[in-house]
Length: 452
Image (cartoon, rainbow, N blue to C red; front, side, top):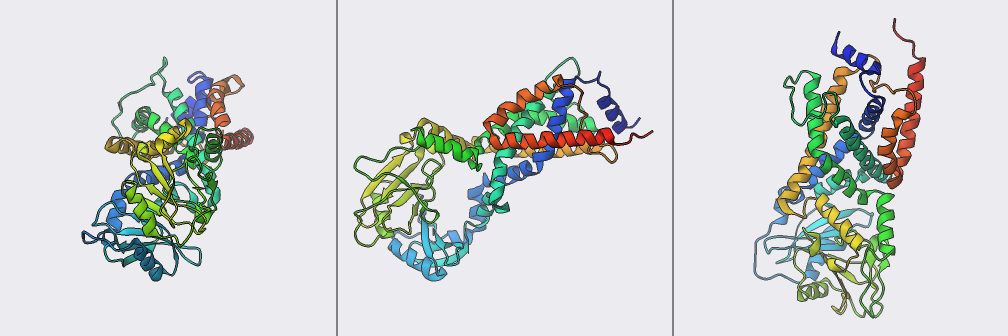
């Protein structure tokens, strides 16, 4: 009897595997089938994004490096050089940390596009212009699935929810029982046989499962439904953004063109009016205030198109505790608000901390190494799952584990997936679709003529 025939016989023999085990295995199979392509894409782009600084520095070394000199020209000349060279309007400026680095200016073009202009801060020379954000912006847009279309962002929540289901059902199947499961090391050594790939799959899931779940949960802020709803709840119930200083205007939601950048999730889209602003707003005024207030470089200054709004200067940080945002009247240099991490509500602090760890910056190289290990593990799990399926697939069929009869066997699956379906609405909707497809597949299998 061949390996495929042996596997098929085992699946068909109810006495060899419990009904609960076979049901969980079936849903583990479908969960992988549904999300592994997306999950592997997210792992690949997420792993690359962990090395954003290194990749960006390598890709744009010729544009971002300048000769270090003691003095710089007026920052207003940076803006003039970028706008003259691109024909657009500067929307934000990344002020460099070191004198041998160029200033990076984001420019909005008349046709709605964006560019990144590199300007030497010492003489206002336009070094070069690239597509907005460069290679890492493309990686970021792929990671959030926005590059596939705005609709695809909703897939983030579905994929993250099903990733948790994959880990939970995998642990259920791994858990030691009377039969020989629960391996903690790779025992099989023949890479041509299925047991090796089964052990590799199980051991990888065992040691990396917690990291994968963490990545899935902390990736939820990027989801279109859950992320927006939870952050909205935190902000509306005093668990998120801080209150504005006394006698200052309230924070307001900005339109797309005026939304500040680099301010984090808690203050995302928040602007502050400057109703008594007089005279022209200048980048030099905003930078002079930021420097006088001791805002550590590098930081990003956002320039609103509405002259009645304050400019924001947000520190670029590795640890969330170092977050600081200044709202500056760029006509007078007055500070309208000085927002720091310790002013955030407890919910926003947890949110920001999760994002920092997810991006591998919060705890240095240890943090980045663990997140990278999770990304690599997802690829190992995906490849080993594909090989296992290929080695046991029946001819002309999908090869899903057979569903046992009766409702009792489904209790284990319901205990795993129902809490997640309630917590993550889009995962719940996708679960309903999956149940419907499972019913259709089962009906087709019952009506399929059996081979003699």
